[in-house]
Image (cartoon, rainbow over all chains, first blue to last red; front, side):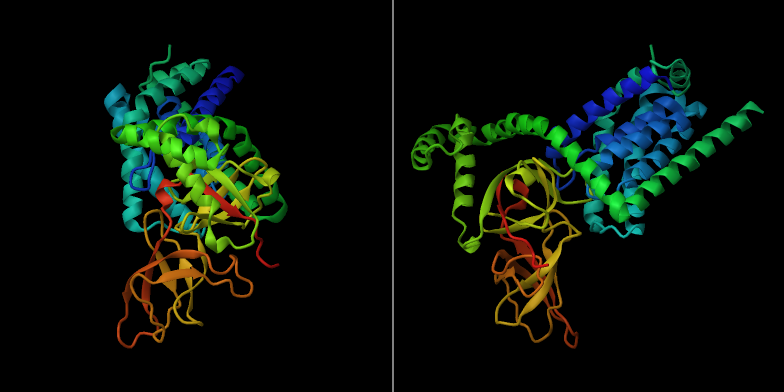
Amino acid sequence: MSGRAWGRVAIVLLVTTIVQVGVLNGLVVDGAHPDAFLLLAIVAGLVAGSQRGAVVAFFVGLVADLFVLTPFGLSSLCYVLVAFGVGAVASLPAGRAPYGFRIVTAFTGGIAGSLLFDGIGALLGQPELPRHQLIVVVAVVAVANVVLVIPAAAAMTWALSADSAGRELATTSGGSAR
Amino acid sequence: MSTTRRNTSQRLTLVILILASISAITLDYKGEASRGITSVRHAALDVVSPIQRVLSDVLHPIGDVVSGAVNYGRAVKENEQLRGQLGTLRRDVLQNETAEQQLQEVLNEEHLPYVQNLPTLVAEVISGSTSNFEDTFEIDRGTSSGIGDDMPVVAGPGLVGTVVSAGSSTSVVRAITDPGSSFGVRFGTPGSVAVAYGRGAGYPLDLSGVTADMSPHDGQIVYTSGIAGASLPAGIPVGKVSFVHYSGGALTKTVQVTSVADLQGLSYVTVLQWFPAP
């Protein structure tokens, strides 16, 4: 990825951070709120493919980990796995349908990412949420992802379109880099 | 051939990123590296805190305006009376009906009977938790105001949490309902002590170690125990017993406690400048 693309990814990440800590943290539904960092990792996989998407998701996770008390690197680990999986699915022929596929992937990615975070956290000895609360978290994150995936994907497409290789991957994975 | 090479490259990248993440997690558990990571976290919070304050100031009143619109006239009148009583306290903020609620909350923090002689600091809650897997919130005071890790945080009727990460201008508070929160409590007769555990936002606390000979009952107030080596000072109200179950023959009772403070609607809190005994 070019330096310009990384610069744009940094801008998108900064805006995501502000939106998350300044706005989304306050949109609490039954103790859960949208997770813009996880969504950004998902759209990284969607737009950039599994390899570069996982690299972007790794850095998204590192930034996300700055604002939580869970072990540093836990979000990175989850986001890398989610972005890689999303990228792999997006590379399939069925993954090229632009909007419907993105919405379904954002929804399922939100479920998978939240469960993965809870599972890996439990393996690392992190306190577990009650089952009912975990269901609420998964539902809120997945539904919020559906609402936010189109602008998030547009932002990531803009960021990675600064890279010539990004244009190729974005096109093959259903992106619309210009 | 090229597909195979690309697949190999993708897998290699995945393995490297997983190893990098695991390395970061491992470093976070080590002393020196952990302190470095904590410093970076504090710096990140300090960087975004001005933005959080602005957004909090902008967005919080909007929600309050909606809820207060029905009683606008009465709210303005009460606002004037309270303004006279409190003088300059947050005068600039008190411009509309939302001020009545904010003012009352600050006033509540100024008269906490259980605080006794402990020095205190009133702080504003500027953000909730960024993670859905922890119950924390951020306040607008940090080490530059005299706040340190492990200090108890109270609001109105009782305990709401403890400071777990104090940056220079902001601090993160772990709510008592966080699944990682635990502390000693007492109730009823002397010697009735137990350990309270958080179960998640919106859930009552669990009491562990309530033996069959103890007699907690619904509505009974539970206080911090403050016994030797405790992480919190004694006598801070925590909650009311909301559920008691005892199966005959069991060694312990199942007891749940509902917080006396409204943890979901916190705007202002008081930090008690108290450190646990070393």
